[in-house]
Length: 409
Image: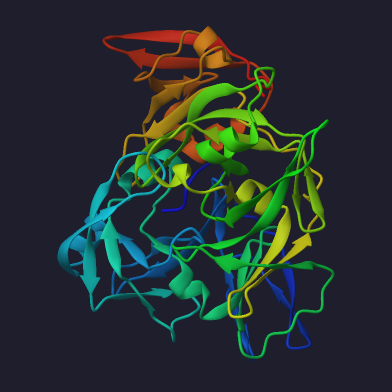
């Protein structure tokens, strides 16, 4: 997977989407697909800043696949692959965020089909366990579509209208107000470009950053890059945290901010940065730009021309925030993603000050049963700087606490 939590807000709107295809204006309700000439428009759900597209494998019924520039191949969840009777071969060690390694398998002669793109089945190359990621996100996570899929098209990701628009790569031309960013591809096939970290009182720090729409945060800088460029002076405020959960398990970092991040002609002010502490895994090698920044744009991926086009949208100036409660929950698994257990608590946060502990099971929020909420809904609620009354089950008893989120970074 791409370097970090593949990670956390359920949002399906009823707004009408206006898209210009082949010179004609087409009005689409959310959930519709459209095809005209050399363009196909697919709706997606944005959950934990991840682009979820619906598809199927054979007669499987609806499945959910994440579009991810941080992966190369088509991947399906290992348990799902076995349930569907797919032919699996051998064992493959798979790493990613975190320092661990998962065991996956090759998939032989299998493909998936996206809803709205039935005429173009997509090859599935690997099966790997994705249940842990589904528990952290709180949504079905059946597979991943990476570079092998993206490179077949010019892929336009419109975060505001929640649509992925697929253009014929041989006939595509861009005429909007965006800026073209030249990209190269690293050893893993991930798109990357040069960008700068800005801090007052010093020269810009230039580096190569991977663009990973499957990472829900804003920026990751690896340990050697931080040390080489002295990006963590003693005076910088940071908090230790689980920076994300990926194929290799938990990724740990110091979370802080930098003065700015300059990408092409765009300046992102005061972004949140994960200064990686990992000594193994993807976060030891890569600097990463994630969806918290990329969703400020309409993103056009033109791999054939080695170009990424960024067109700032109405969210561009919105401040980038980090978790305010210090409380990280995960679901207890299962098809309905119900039951919420505390996965982690930040030190010196509202959650730790309220006495919440790892392993506590959330029972209710402001008197309402926790079962009435989804995990993405709870995570969105806990961004609000208002007081919540939370009830947890611990061992054989219950505790009730008051928690008021606040800005930690």
